[in-house]
Image (tube, rainbow, N blue to C red; front, side, top):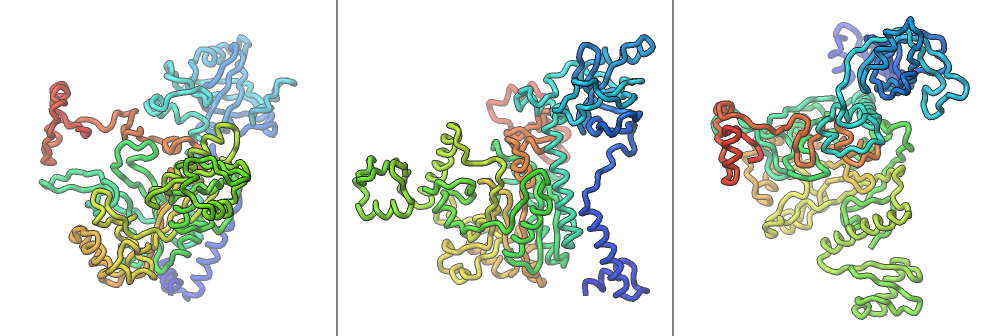
Length: 596
């Protein structure tokens, strides 16, 4: 049926369907075969250079080339190092009188000025080769040069080994982007995303669909950014994710959706988060949890960088209860053990040196030694209390112990090792922190309950497990998803009765579920976090071209910024200034200031 529909869509109405399908499938196979072969991209098309600085080798000897780039280094006005996005090359500055104008340009241009040079690729003199540079066997004998733009004194050097504060890097982000590490991070990100598109669209028939950025408030979840409209008292909200839209696309029969989606959460000052971030958003109809997990394992395996150890599938799986009991967290770092706050120092005579010893009976000690495989002079850390809190304390203590041991030279968390883990069977609901007698969704209100626990929804909802699954990498959650509720009555009951949410906010979704919604599920991978872990970057800000500071500010453009009252008037907004901001209010002539 799908082949027939695809054939008609491609203009095959007057051609036998089987023939058109054969042509389409054959063409697709050839394209996929070509795309799977490693092809060198053409980096010099449409531009004023013949080669990049980083590509020249001994095989180019004698060739006439034109290069464009930044002056990174100059020595004794004899040679300079030219840099572009692809690498470095040494350029010999001509010393003869006939090339005085070329020498003047290359010797007087400040560091980081942009130049174009033309000349011949020659071998470096014997003994002057640089094995640390990919272009270290050759240099460029310059014949002509042009200064394309000069550079003023920089706030910092464009070298990775030069230490710079993050605030300074963000203030001059366009300069920081010239560094090798930022170039590597962003280009690797681009390659991985392209491979993901290829895997999803070309190999598995997903449809790349853009969803709206201006939406409405969603009950539950993170705090949303509010956008005023010209209608009095009416506001848009920026979506935390395309969650509702991708479910509606399944109702619309799109079957397989994906999007490199921009998402927004007003989470305040959190050093490991960004107010705007990117996720690989996926939804499928007629799928179960195993299907989604298999898809993601294949996606990561296909898009994984070739310079890293290959991804091994399938990923191991662990229930939420197991993760909490063994590691004290729902996102365990499984690169090391140390599973289980009082110190216990076991001795061979079983006389434990610990203040907790008198509280543990002899048979309990024996069982503890057996279960934990305690060795002579080992150390065991114990805690007591409410199960989830006690486990959480031990989980944090486990990571702290790992930090202390690694600070003393013991490698527990190999940075070159990528340890993936699925965590499943989360609780569907959690008690609200501010009111433990009420429930809130452990993830979001559209997650389907576990089939074995549906009967508990009306009697013991706190005991209901969900069909939610998280993907964890080296102790970081890099993805989360679930099988969704596709029955309107069940969704209405959970929203109105159990969560006590206003169902009017979701009337459009409930109505859609009533019109023949297929079973469906999906997942979202946090692209920023994933790339951060793959590159080994210290922060997600190092894999985003123009990130916000940990306080949510753009230090380069000084956003968020003020607005004068006349620009707020069409949106029917009047700023209420705190008492301690009166002086600032006067100095700014009463503009709008979002932080107020």
